[in-house]
Length: 315
Image (cartoon, rainbow, N blue to C red; front, side, top):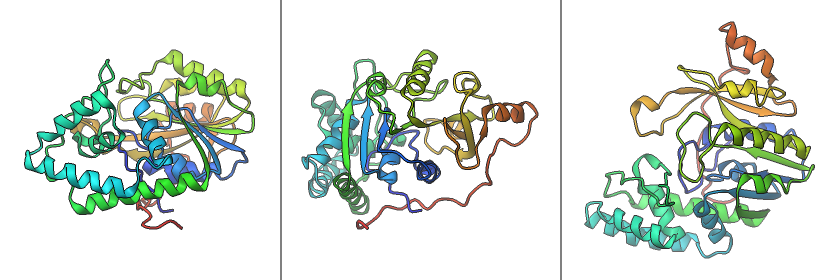
C-alpha cells in the first residue's frame, strides 16, 4: 500500500501505522468514519471513507483543512506563498522564521501554520499555555527548496481531491462533544494523546479523560479502533489492562524518529485496541500474561517496511 503523507507534520503522526489500521478498518461495516482526535488527518486521508467527521481540539489543524475544503488554500497559492516566504527565510539566515511565528500567533493564518510546520525544529507541534506556537527554527535557512515545495503542493492537491471525493466535515471541538454525537453505525478511530508521554497544550491528557473516552465509546454502541502504546524498553502502559481490559489487542514494533532528544527516539510496541476482532488480535488478558511471562508481545510477524510515497496524481 502506498501511503499518502499530508502536508502538516507532527510528532506521533501515524504514517507508519496507516496500512495496519486501514486493513483492519476495511474488515468492518460502517456508515461514517469519526475521529475525535484528527491530528494531521493521515489515517482518514488514507482510509478514504465516503463519509467522515474529523474533529480536534487544536483549532489550527481544523482551520487548515477547512481552508483547503473551501478552496481558500489551493496548491497554486501554496506554491506562491512558500516560494516567497522561502526566499525571505534564506535572505535572513533563518531569522524570518520568528517573524512568521509571531504573525501566526497574532493572526492564525493557515498558510503560516503550514510554513511553521515544515520549517520548525524536528517537525514538532507544541503550544504554550496561551495557545502560542513556540517551537524554534530547524536551523536550515534553505528549507524551502523547489523539490520540497513541489512535494508540499502535491500533498495539498491530493487532500483536496480526497475531500471532494467524499463527504468530509471538519470540526474544532473537545472529544466529549464528538462522543456525544455518535451514531451506532459509526466506526470511531481514536488516537488520543498517549498517557505518560509529552503532549502539547491543545492535547493535554489525563487518566480521567481516558476513562471518559472509554465510557463514551462503550455507551455509543459503535465499533471503535484505538491507537495507543503498549510498552517500550522502560515500562508498560498499564492503562490497557485496566481501562481497556475488555478489548481485543493487536501489537507491532515501531521506531519513532521524531523527538527533541536522541534518547527519545526509541523502539515502541504500538497497539490498536477494539471492541471487535482485529486481524491477528488477542485478548488484553492474554497480552498481560505474555508480558508477565516475558513472551513476545507481537501478535503478527514483522512486516516489510511500508513504502511511504505521495500520489503525484489522483487515481
